[in-house]
Amino acid sequence: MRRKTSEQAMPFCPFCRAGIAKPQRSDMPLRQFPSGSCRCGAVYVSDLTGKNGGEALLESLALACNEDEGRAWSLRDGEDYVLRIMSYDTRKHLFNKRGHFKDGMARLYFVKLTSSE
Ligand SMILES: [Zn+2]
Image 1 (cartoon, helix red, strand yellow):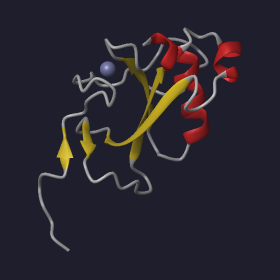
Image 2 (image 1 turned 135 degrees about the vertical axis):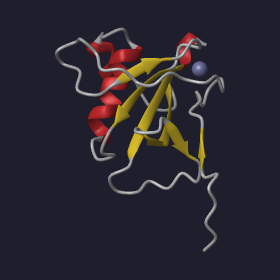
Image 3 (image 1 turned 120 degrees about the horizontal axis):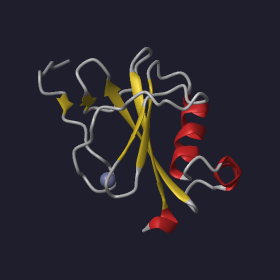
């Protein structure tokens, strides 16, 4: 096993490759995950433990639909939106390059609606 120090990278949007800001806690009462949005229209939600994938995905879909949850529920993966999941180090605000989803490691859920392209 080789160990390298360069296994982390500055976080970027997987759709347009722009650097992204650290996810922020929302003021919305129903939001439990920190989130953010990219200038290309993609949104992202940080699942801090890596164990709340379903909820994190639903939150990112709701966010992508401007909180229109009825519409968010009707979206279909690969048809109405594209999902990318990245392994994320919340303390350093870095991606883990090798994409290993270790227990306890946060994930960033990126969602982009295909209709917005
Ligand atoms: Zn983007």
